[in-house]
Every structure is written in C-alpha cells, then in structure tokens.
Amino acid sequence: MVAETLLTPASLIWPLFVTEGQAVEEPIATLPGVSRWSVDRIVERAKEAAALGIPCIALFPNTPRHLRTERGEEALNPDNLMCRAIRAIADAVPDIGILTDVALDPYTAHGHDGVVDAQGRVLNDETMRILVDQALTQARAGASIIAPSDMMDGRVGAIRAALESEGFHDVQIMAYAAKYASAFYGPFRDAVGSGGLLKGDKKGYQMDPANAEEALREVAMDLAEGADTVMVKPGLPYLDIIRRVKERFEVPVFAYQVSGEYAMIEAAAAAGAGDRDALVLETLMAFRRAGCSGVLTYHAAHAARLLAG
Ligand code: PBG
Image (cartoon, rainbow, N blue to C red; front, side, top):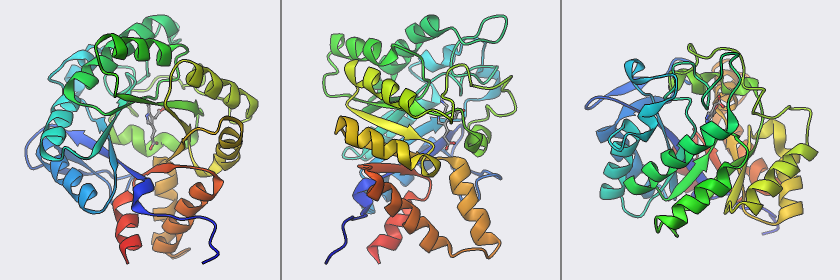
C-alpha cells in the first residue's frame, strides 16, 4: 500500500534481433537466452509481447555480411530485413508499438554508426543526410517510434522535419539522447554482427562516462529539435543521469538496460551469485524509481511473466 513505485509490463520494451531465413532461431553466445529470429519468428515474438502486455518491441537487424558497405546503403533499401520485419509485425500485430533503430552500424562494413573519413572519423553532416532517409524508409514500412541511436548532432531536427513533410505526423521520435561510449555494448555488437568488423572505438560521437552536464546539454538539444521522449544508455551505471534528466526536463525518460548489463545478470545467476528473477525485477524497479517511464530490456518477456505471477 505504501510502495512509491510500480513496475508493470506496460513499462517494458523488448529489443529483438532479426535475421534472414525461414523458421530460424539463432542463439547468441554472449547473450545467453537471447536469439536472432527470422521474420516469421519475430512475428511470433511480437504476438507473445502483446499477450504479455508489453506495449512495444524494438528491432535490430543482423544484415548479411555481403550487404554491408562503406556507406551502409542497405539501410535505405525498402525491402531490407528491417523493413520486412516491420511490415510483417504491423500486419499481424497492429496494436504493438514498433520502435526502430536509426544508425548505420548494422549496415556498414566498418561497424560504425555513420560514414567515416580516411582517418576513421565519423562524418556528422554527411551521415545525418543518410539517417534522414533511413528514418523515412522505416516510417514508410510502418514504424511507430523512430529511435536514432547514432549520436550525430542535428539528426533529430532533420528527421522530424522529414517525417512532417511526408505526413508522418504521428510517428514519434525517441532520441538516444545521452548515449555513452560504453564497454557494456559487446554482446549487442555480436548480435547484429558488427562487433568483429568495428575498427577503433565510438568515442568520437558517443559520450564520455565522466560527463553528466554534457548529457543534460545533449538532452536539451534533442528536445529542442523535436524529440518526443529521450533515452539514457546504458542503464544501471547511469541512474544518476536518468534522475537528473527527469528532474530538469519533466519529459518521458527511457533507459536501455543494455546487452552487457543483461549478460552480467545472467552470468551472476549462472555462477550461483544471485537469484536471477530477483535480480531482474530489482534492477527494473530501480529504473522506475530513478524516474523512467519505461525500460528497454532483453528480460522484458521474462519479467512480464514474473509480474503476471
Ligand atoms: C548502435 C547501437 C548499439 C546498441 C544499440 N544501438 C551499440 C553501439 O553503440 O555500439 C547497444 C545496445 C546493447 O548493448 O544492448 N547504433
């Protein structure tokens, strides 16, 4: 009766990895319990999410190696893996939210989120123009929330303007506003197949873990450019940022409990160092207490089952 915070499936977003083929489930070694699914199987996951009361899923493609190029052109193909998954889900499960990632890392041969110059530095403005087309490609396929995770400056405003001009007034933007250059993304990069390809690091465009005020400036810019909601990423090591963003801006804040955080919980449970279900629910509750409207978590379906009792 006196609990100050509620955790329900309504605040969970389930990230899912899509791969080519039919009836395919490919387990991901560094993310025990998480698989890549072919489009037909992803539709089943979307149905499962809806039945569990999870309002939204997030999609990430494992683009076949031969389609990855210097400039990530496959991101703009209206029949790419991502768009086929979006259309299939929107058809079969019309009420579920489909959050789509805007960034080039699953499509580039070098694993960076944008186009790079000869020195390997990401070219902000050139990348931004491609990201706008990527966002439109996803919106045309039926995405409900566009989530730019690339951290280029100015992309939220450019994407918003493009969405408006094509009549996508109801498509939201959830900006990965404060995204840190983190050591917790390793298993994700395995999952989308960009890990082995990545040259250098992403410190040129992702944030320094030492900085909090910079996160507030990043959030302020994305909101001014038209973001509907903002995200902090990774999650648990950055609860202070979540709290400060919530208090300063009073907008819906989301956290991404990223792949390395998921893997830590699974490793702790496997080693007998903690109870898996309790760890899952306690960490998710912590996000809510810190001020999150919702959390992207690979534990979403499991947590929703636990919450259903
Ligand atoms: C890249 C992207 C990353 C994640 C989501 N989008 C990784 C990165 O920035 O290298 C990480 C998610 C996770 O670790 O679960 N656009």
